[in-house]
Length: 445
Image (cartoon, rainbow, N blue to C red; front, top):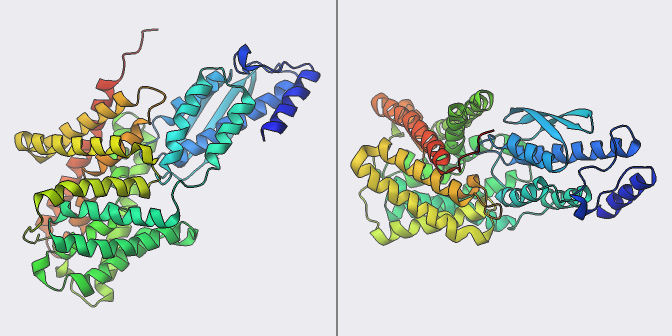
């Protein structure tokens, strides 16, 4: 790829265009807008920025607020200007270079499955934005990131999903039974998730299939004795990988920041995923011939020692790294942010209550993640904040509320749904506030 790009640069020079060397400033001037060299360069820059937009959209499951800014900065380093109309799964990108404007439509499904690409895109975009990267080199490096294989094999991803669920289990019920049942149920969801990565048809209905399978197993095997706690509490840790709490909070944050279209669409999609999970749980009840009154969330008596609860966050963070393809070198920083979030939330909850504690923890997480991510060689803010954000557990409240309503417990159900709404707002506004407070003040124009 770099060889053919170099040949095109040489041909541009022969045809009268100017092939820019790295020491000339990175290739922001190769050819005029009227010559064939200028036409080819404009097409290549447009294709490069469209590819960057698609990659950013594909990794924007936590919010798309920084997509346009990143593309604009990279374009400036290549001597171009951009404008973008953005929705969660697509963008209309206009690139202006050498007096020529090109408009392309880009589509990509938002997700957080390959955070290694998110980590690699930030330093690439920074180098290009400085204006010292030749176009051919920028193309080659972006293609290498886009085409890179997953950092962990499929079985490690599956193990990560199991650990992700097991680490979350004590938050639902601090019992050994909860951890043991979650390990087996998490294995089922891990197998389905890995299989869906190879079968797109299954991926479309994965939350429904996974929640149905987990519901059947819990009702038939694990929830026969009420002493082990309610069926919903036994189901939730294994389904936490699919619960759209991150999407709910990202949607609320985008709405709060003024990204109305992306926020509204993401909110609707998150609710749709939540309803898929709820429907799967109800299908499990019907398949087993059970009664919806079994859908209660009365917790069992705790028998888990404090050290096990403390270490569960290590298991949870390792699971997050493996399940979402986070580079292994970031394990310790992410673990520190997780424990910070838990500590701040626990302390602030004692003083301000549950919602206030969640808000303060989200603000602290957002501020620290933003401060750490300032340098271009540091991981992006979204990646740093993600594991800590998961500890604040939003979407599980929605699942508990819906199943409680279906089980004939309207008071508890509406209480959980109201808690979900207030917690979503607290997390999203807290993260936004922390990010704003930690940003460096911009110079006045």
